[in-house]
Length: 460
Figure (cartoon, rainbow, N blue to C red):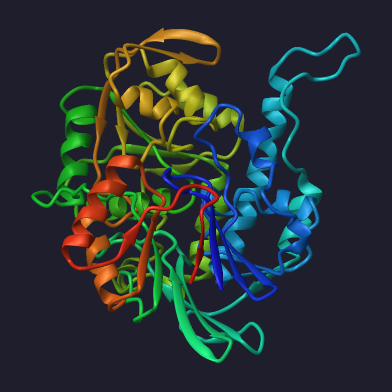
């Protein structure tokens, strides 16, 4: 059995791992690598022939895990994609949105003399997304699924996102049973809407994410307390606006539920809230569709108070005209818009009109990859480029990790400990400092740990 790391190796994005059991080849995740400016061109260069891949296992819908699937299909992959039902629904939304983003980027540069757009060609189009969706086969949590005579798969809930799973594979390797687990992205306990991660069973090999290695989430303040504080400062003490960049899928739903609880309890006077993301509308419907998979707190709230994602003074913005009207709304308000790292979507319009507004607060609630506009703002950049214009940053920039969908250092160590004593733990999906911190901590606990390089192969 061979395991090769082709993505998220010593970096965060682009998750893609190749497991070979004899001649049978399984790709675990197939995400976009967007840590470089030229990622579109780089992502179509697979280090293997996509037609040789027999199967893809998708841990969850986020684009750094799913976003290159249509490219794989475009270049010859003909197998199935195994995932949970919510992951299938959410991935479809994200992939279609990716096509729109590619087309916008292509049309952003001037036309050539022949009248053609000169921007980067799209990695894939709607047809390729539809071909990809046709390959989805959904599997329920904790139900062993036999892939073939030698391999079975079980999905374990890990929080992080609706439908997110760790993939546990039991393999008959020449008469010897071996178990290997891929963590996907590990969530955290007591997160709005989402279930807490279930323990991953004992395995022989474990591929674990390390996003928050060496980092610890805030423990001395609750999410409710922090949101009340930020809203009070930005919208009540002064007549300003609070802009919260949030991923449309996952983060927005959890944030809306948390705000619903705050205003239902009357912890603050009413403040108008706008959710300006068409994709968030679609994703929220998926959360409603799979309501049996939300956590008990959300289920109980639904029974007593109704829909977690609808309440007074909350408005979902549908059209571009409505979005522009939000920019002209001068009363105190909260604007939730995508994308979370500020690299696209309607959030850029709101930034354009507010980044130089002293009465605006920008609250980051998630991770921003290096090179993104969000990362630059969090790093204290005094001038940023938005819509081809250099702009001074006068808005207040704040950040909280209380809505981070990733487990922190302690959560990751606990997750690895649950797997028993694997022969080897492979750390992926992390920056250098995170990888080093988690490696040291796990080695001190007696684990055999390696942070593989891109393209590194292991016989297991």
